[in-house]
Structure formats: structure tokens, C-alpha cells
Image (tube, rainbow, N blue to C red):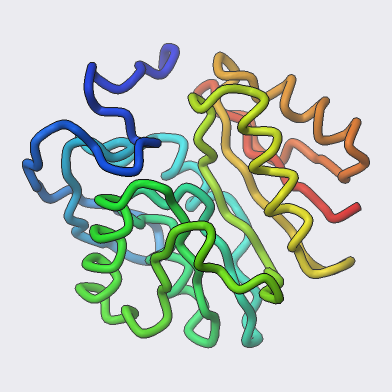
Length: 209
């Protein structure tokens, strides 16, 4: 698999209000333990189909903690990670965070369709209460916002992992800087382990400082 392609012109998935016209469609996510039909749209991340990095993350990262906890899908897109986490961890509350209003609406819709809408909170970053801590973070982070913005974003949210027990799993393509991101995280005194390397993607386990 080659280098991931950028979104088409006008489809800036990190824009608060996508300029491209809405054109909803269905995509299917098939994993070993479940199959989901999800509504997606133009102007959101991987709107044409399930991103292979996202699928790899969901297929290989450890299951969410079974006990009641808060989970975070950072940069949720139309919600595949958030919905899968909610179905795999029925006692968890899943915070699905994105700046894209269309993404948040789709995530809420897909959570309702999957029967977990009461436990998936699709919200803008500023709507997550400051005292919420996360037992786990699962993310295909928005690399294309640029390195300084990405580092700031990760610094903000990784700091909200539960001390000692919290874990984050990030999937990043090597052509989009997965190895340099791992070095940066290590330099920030996070524990970092590459758990999977496949199809050009790296899945990184990140432990609290």
C-alpha cells in the first residue's frame, strides 16, 4: 500500500464547517468480532471508505478496559473507532472528539444506529469537562493539521490519561511521520512502544509520563 492520499480539494476534514456539499453514503466495517454499516459523507476523514489505518488499529489494539471508565476517540471522523469501542466496552462512556461539525453529527447518528448512542458523546474539544480522565485513548490522529498543531493536540489529551494505568493507541502511516512522532513522544517522556507495523502503518502504544 502506498502513501495515503490527501483529501480532495475542498474536503478539509479538520475544518469546523466543511465547504463541500453533503453526499451521504454507507460504508461497511468488518472486524473479527463485529460488522458495522456506517453512514459517512464528503468533507470528513476517509469519507469514501474505512481508512486502512483505522481498521488496523481496531483489529490489533487491545480491547478497552472492562470496568466503567471514560474512553477517548480523538479526531473521530464519522465514528468507527468510537462506536467499536462503545460496543466492546458496554460499561464505558466514549468521548468522540472532533472540530468538524459534520463528523460529530455522523458519529452521533452511527452510534444511535449501533445501539450505543447513550454512551457515545460526540462533542467539540471544548465540551469535554476538564475533570474527565481517560482509561484509554484510541486515535487515528489528524496528522495533516501540521506537526506543531498535532504536538499541541496530543500534549493536551495525553495529559488526561489515567495516571499509571491509562494507555493510548495511535495509528500513523510511516510516510506521514509515525517514526518521528514516536521519537517526539519519547522526548516528551512518554513511554512509547511500536506494537504493530503493517502496510506502512505503525500502531504506537503510549504510556503516561
